[in-house]
Length: 256
Length: 256
Image 1 (cartoon, chains in turn cyan, green):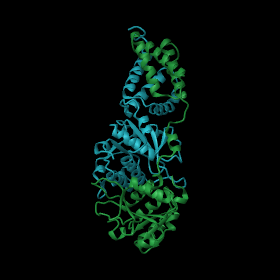
Image 2 (cartoon, each protein chain N blue to C red):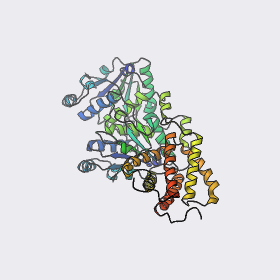
Image 3 (cartoon, chains in turn blue, orange):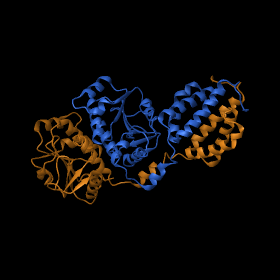
Image 4 (tube, each protein chain N blue to C red):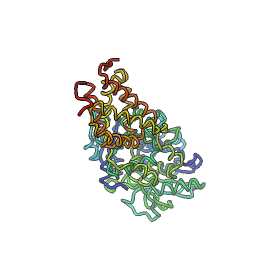
């Protein structure tokens, strides 16, 4: 069981939710399992207003944060897990079934990390672009004949598993603990990605037409590598220097 | 994971459900987790008709059994588990929290027993009399400030746990070990390290006196990150290009 402090480090993120009843059901499931931080990314405004003003809407719905992009919503999280089924997509990220993924998230929270659990729109779920902001993909194991869950029910099942799933094997725990260095948050990974992208252009590494594809690949790559906060700061320093030199070759080189 | 035959031995029983949307949500959760046997005890007739005739109502709702009493609904089951919270009642039956209760039910199903999982009406849950038809009481562990779950969500969480509570298959564990891409060999990591080192010097990122320390840090960093063979080839390509540009700024830049 997670402590209230540990639960407060989980951000539940809904991307473009549509049905106000579903939004209300998400809020209720969060309250049932003791989670309180909700972010909503570019919701349909009328439905969002309706959900918030519903009779008996829990306080966490009043306090929910609204952002324009998923990147903004998860910027201060060090681990971001997208959810869904693999029926209609093949994620590039490592995939965990929920019975194992829940405990992984729980241990991240217990270890002091800020974690985001991201749910896509009711119709089609998270896009490939959304997933490029995620470190992992968590799949609720469902029947192949009816794989797609209702949003409120999917959130309930995931939060149940995160709140109570702190079992799990010793090997798993060892694997996840890694070096113990603090992980990079999503915002600094995005800054590094942008800087490398700019460097690629400045170095003539790839044509501008490839920029969107490179950006996507970089996001996925940086999350797979999982650099520590210190690693990321170092790489930011190096690429800043490189970019500076590429843009102004007269600046001092090999000496110093 | 339970087999389809084992799942077919689970009877989901709703006692006097009221809200047709909840009944629909129960049916959807059952389909999601591969269960198909639903019984409804003395439902509110108008709402029950509405739920059954809803657009897209799954087949299991059409085939649901209707009984007058809970005793009739569970008559051919060898193990009957009531569900709810203990906030408003103190069951006389043995109480299991769902993370323990789910696997218990799963093992009963796997052992050839017919099992019923019983959910009370939305307003007040199962009565003491209802519980007298039960062998055990399964409680979903919820936050004491908001203990009462929505019916559709409670069913989803319970069925998830019953379907997957027999934890940790070998395939699952194997799948997590990563994306399955071949890892970089030590030689290519060292080539990448040297190239980055050279780039650091060419960019004037750090003085030559730091070269040995940087080399060490790079080796450690690259091994910790554990890039795949493809990742490493890409990074080699990028840094080769950068180095080339730093050493000869006249080579074509942003165009191409």
